[in-house]
Image (cartoon, rainbow, N blue to C red; front, side, top):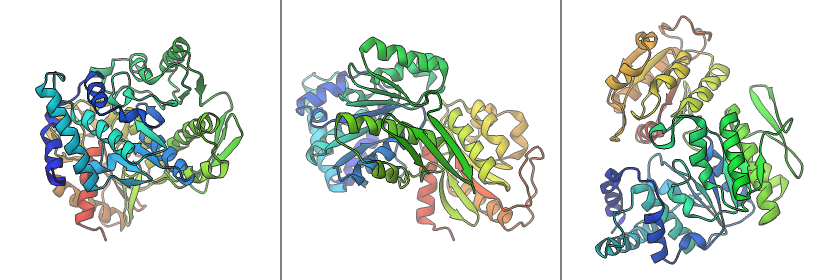
Length: 453
């Protein structure tokens, strides 16, 4: 297959959806001589923040001049973004060549009846990442769990550190209806004698992760011990302090938002374990890594006049973090462009996020599980309906949002239909995209093809 044919193959298996279990992945990898065991790994699970932790930890290791593979999901524009070594995506040539090899192996196993069903999109991408990392002889892989943990394809790995960032209600139809049930699934990444970094604060979820660690004999390191973490806000900039096992770390994350200070603390805790049990890491490079990480689509500011912010915010925890950021750093009128998967807690997300917006545009993105604006409207509390405009076509929704954002930024006839909002409508406004990383991907494609001026 060439690169375009490889992309089409992945598109063709999208309909396979989600499949829990490690049997398929294990079978495929065994016939490829277990590429995932050719290097040590760190696995990162959680409801929010796991991608940011992977990005920060990967950056720290790159600064130490290790050959570092990072596997994350989903992607924003190209699936090559999911598989990176030293901050560089897998090349088109390697992508097509290795996926061709993988497909031939899968087809052979299916024909022989060894595989009962073809691997899903995520399982295939995970196997591709493992193959690529072995080919490039990486020193260590940083793996982001896709969903859950216990049956996630990444959990076939044998990590030297496991990290669980946060636990919130998400994917209830798959993971459970309570934070404790969801934590039990995510705690499946905990392995015997492998240290566990726990950034979870929800009490019920915390207890589940602690109990699982004790059960399997894994050392348990809670990030937020008493007085272990603090912050200071000066001149619109957060500075954080984390008391680790080895020393005190003081840092200002390059990734914006209060929550990134917490993600950085979990990253530092994991880095200390690596420094103790794998390779020595320096304080200066740990701090430099935290303060130089780039992670697109997470409170990413791509323009200033007006400010344009891209943030996935696909669940309640993410919506609350984005709302707090808007209220703290974007005081003027907000135009919010929102789209979501239909299996998300849309009413809860809207109840948290929409009070921060003055105008809301509901749109879609090209994915089978995306909710149409009419579906969203049925699930959004009626109190927000007067601020809402529906535009199913994102190529029309985006320029409409920019038009409104420019009007509010230059203070031209922007009436604020949100009388309860505490922000100052006389100040310059901003445009915010949120609700799904798939929407963020559509926005990035639009701005790539239509440079904003």
